[in-house]
Image (cartoon, rainbow, N blue to C red):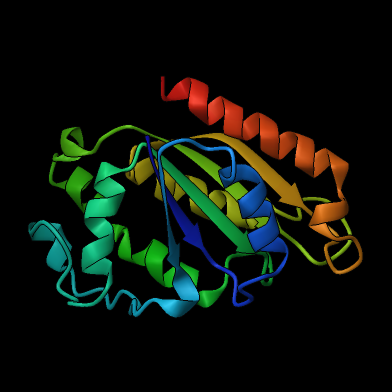
Length: 186
């Protein structure tokens, strides 16, 4: 089982990392983390190269990420919430996945392996209505193009006041999601 994680936090040891560790520590197989803040991935420039060709015209680290996406059985997005969405460096990765949308446009979607996906999102603000809706919509749309079905999520509000590590409900849900991925991949 191969799990590819897109980690979107500027903080290497913050709440998002704690949440990610809770989920991945029990996963079997390979777990690889693409750290959006510490990877050299440029934003999409809308050159439309991918509309007529496989791949992207920008030659940066994302060229190494595409094969990892293709081979993954599971994709996990782990991110803090910045103004109701993912931070800029992670958004660059999402936008560069335009190549998968373009593959569908070129009727090459049959080449894209099916995957499971998890969304792990931490919000510093106290809970409010639709707090995680915008980020969920962005990720759902992009994951659809990656042929990935969201099989679970953990949305954690109020991390400015309550540590993820101290949240028993989160710990229990993380364990359940790890087990679910294992079952789905067997």
